[in-house]
Length: 243
Image: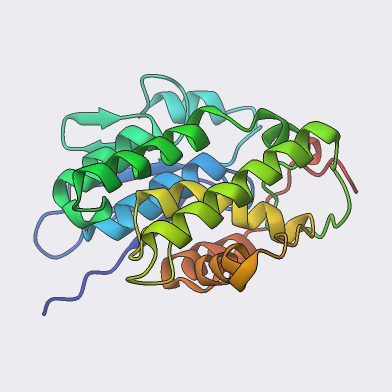
């Protein structure tokens, strides 16, 4: 079996792009590992697809951030996947593209797959209070902060999704639909938020939500992202709001 390696290119430094033996034409442009939840979703999707790629990290909220991102992303936002002459600039669209390469990223049963897509889309478009008051900040401990009534409603809904999916569809493994899927990728940054803000999932029968949180945190791809976040030194004062 051939082993692929993922090379990280940081735009915090003037690093030269490198290529792998053979031909690698795929680049994923992301923001800070510590702060960029959408970048995390895109990265996890490409990583799960098995497709070899280069990661280009662009520091957010700097004077040259917009210009650097615009070199790759038509929307001016991250993440953006560049595969040859194809650019895909939305995390869920990146995940769908990756599922074309690795169909196991969605459940095989059409009805179950529809539920997986529904909970993924709900994460993609919803939970605005959680995003506003509990932004992703992996390196911090903000336990107890951000708990507005609207945030608590978002948390309750997320826990209900986890509980329902694990009970109905999770028999084949520790994730929402058994095996690691796009649905888990969409909720992985929420797990990061729960750790940062000290959110302990409510005690359901069998502790489905708590077990799920621990399973996501221990996934090897998530561990890779966490390690990259801890290795960063770039800080954004606007995102460190509870210091």
